[in-house]
Length: 303
Image (tube, one colour):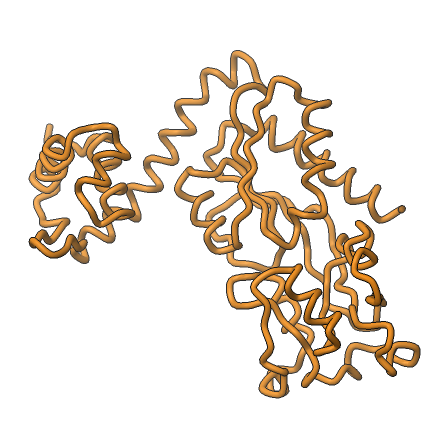
C-alpha cells in the first residue's frame, strides 16, 4: 500500500501557508524548523509534487500546494471533530466550544448569551470570537471555530445552517432630520445620504439589498469601520443608516443622544442563523445553543 500523508505533515503545511515563514510556522507547531521542513519535504515525496517554492527572500506555495492546503484544512477539521467524538459520547455538553459571532450581532446578545449558557450548560467552556463574516466562515470550515452566529444571506456552502430569526433593519437618523415624521417607505429614502459600514461587514450587503442596483452609484460613499463610528457619523448629521432590530431593542440607538429609529415599509430583512460543520460531533451543544439564542431574540423583541 502506498504511503499516505499524515495529519502532522498536513498541519505543518497549513501553518506554513498561514505564515509563509518556516521559523514562525515551526514555533506555532511547537517543533524545530528542521523538523517542520523535513515533514514538508516528506509530504512532497509522498504526494509526488512540489508544494512550496523556497528562496532566501520568500516562501511561496505552488498551485499544487494551494490546492493541498485547502483540502488539508478540511481534513484537519474532520480530525478535530473525530477527536471529540469519544468525549461527546461519554459526556456531552462539556469541554471547550469556540463560537464565532459577527460584529453586528455580538454587542447586542453576547452578555445575555453567556449568562444563559452558564445556566443551561455549566460544564461547557464557551470561547467567543468576534470576526467579520468571511473570516468567520473560513475559520469554521477549517476547524478553528466550532459554531458561528451569522446573518444571512451569506455564502455558507458545505456547512450545516439553522435559520433562527428573521430580523428587519430599522432606519436610524438624527431627530433633527426634517423627513423623520413623514418618512414611511424605504423606497423614498435619499440614497445620497445613506451611510454604510465598510467592505467585510455583511450588514453592508444587507443594507444595499434594499437599494435598486442601478441606483447604488448614488449612495454617499461615506463608510465606517465599526458600528460606534457609524453612529457618530449619523449623530454628526452626515446622513442616516440602517441597523438591525436588536440594535434598537438593546438600547444601542437610545444611548446616542439625538438619534432615533423607525421601521419603514419594505425594510430589508436579514436572517440570524447558527452554523456548524456537517461533520461536527457537537450537535447536542448546537441544538441547545440554537434554542437559547432563539429564546433570547424573542425576549428582546418583546421588550
